[in-house]
Length: 374
Image 1 (tube, rainbow, N blue to C red):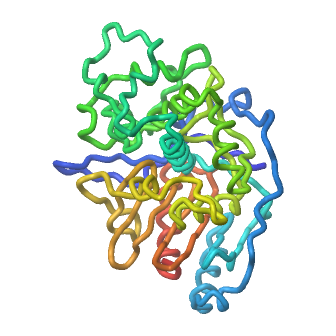
Image 2 (tube, rainbow, N blue to C red):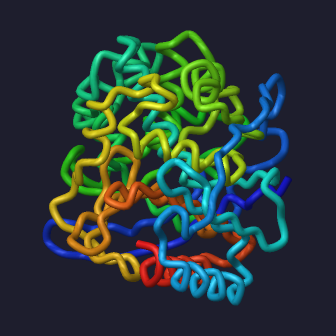
Image 3 (tube, rainbow, N blue to C red):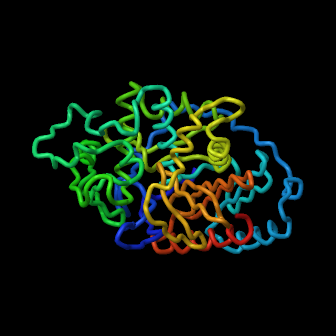
């Protein structure tokens, strides 16, 4: 297995009167935050036979073979790209690996957040959680609110799903002293100071999503892994190979999951088909649609994508040329879903790089895909 480091990567930074975002794809914090084997769990995980993707050729799928060949040439020329998968019309038509094989799994960093979004949707669909307007503090009656900033009482699940908790957070900073092995990580998150009033500003904050995983555990009476295994992984015929846990044994919601590229494509297929897989509705269509609504008042540019926005832990880019949505993680871990082309693209890249280099690599990769596939 190739386990990725949990570090931060700035992929975009823009500032104006209505939208301030230092967007970083990361784990609980940054370069030196905890990601030891003590906190990475594989115990009692179910490893099933992977979904048997039907395969074909790009030509049979109606893709321009000249463009596919050119794309693969550029991918091969950039050694940081470890794999590229293209699924068209529910058929795997391109599968490239540089130094690895289809059975290798990878740490997907912040792309994990999109899985947590699905799990929250499933919990709401099943009535385990009432709605995205539920107050966050209501899930933590045991939390001591003495001296709490009163604005936190207005926190809702939706604000955490959209990165608008208002928490004063810089994903490029070192948070080792906050998230140690002898503190409760969920309580620590609840105590973080506010920079903005909840619901007003986008600040990319991984602890938001780790807290959502804790809420799934508290409301379902199951570990987040067991909940995901029963309601998401098993129906999709995928397997998480390892998953980061906090010192209290709560699985991280914002980072630390490991999957094979084929399994990531299967997750993208679920969203391509509005929550239905193999004729079964796994996540409600309504949740998928709500998830993909842009929730910020202004867009940002990300490499060749000109209209990037954020929904419920999924990125989206809606314009006339490149309309798509994506799960994204440090090191070029991407799931791109392009509904108009009935297509899913999965990439894995080198995560053993600096934050600046990771940002450069992401821009190169998106440029290749935009030129030949989007």
